[in-house]
Length: 261
Image 1 (cartoon, one colour):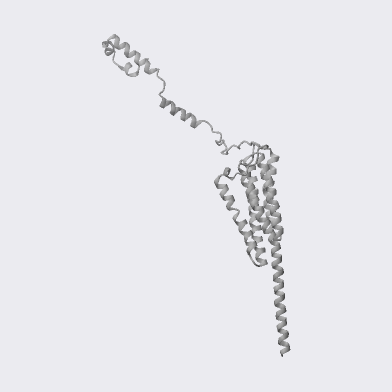
Image 2 (cartoon, helix red, strand yellow; image 1 turned 90 degrees about the vertical axis):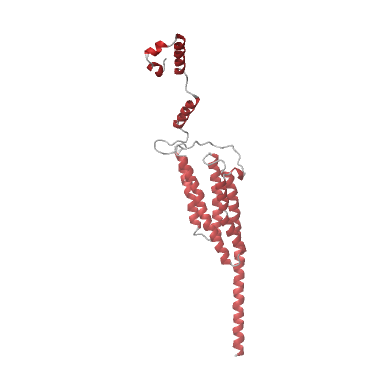
């Protein structure tokens, strides 16, 4: 096949060329016309094909991301290795323990009985908010697995997600020691539900690594603050005894004054 430049060459110029030169020109033109695309052109074409190919995480026509597949972990062992937990949830989770630990230390270092009860109520109020937060995790997992999980299973997760917030709200109207005991049981029951969600593949692989550590420390703080109720009773008895002694002293002083008169 002749190139465009060869085809546009005047006929008299072609006729004037020697036969050998004309044959070589025709061969070269045919070779150029059959040469494949250079490597650079092929790379650009490959990139265009890759860019237009559908990705597994691409959004559908409705603009939503398809749900991730659920992979059960029925026989997988639970690890307590915190190094497998991403940095952000690990630091935020550990920082969330500070109010629990602070209220526990305050309940065991303050002097007055009213101060002990105040620290217990502070810890119970914070515990109620954390229960609501942890329950909302199951609401998120249910939404993330719409379409890949059975409807009745999702309904259970939605119901489970609101139950901790209701329990936490109810503890706000309870006495301090009863509220702490109720939240202690609720946190451990929620941990059991979280492990079941991990077994079904609904939460990340590292989730129980962090949850077991956090729930263990929260349980220790709630239990220690609950035990401060005995310290509060002793402090209350000491305050009553001191008040009675002061009243007796005042009465004795009044009797002395009355005798003198």
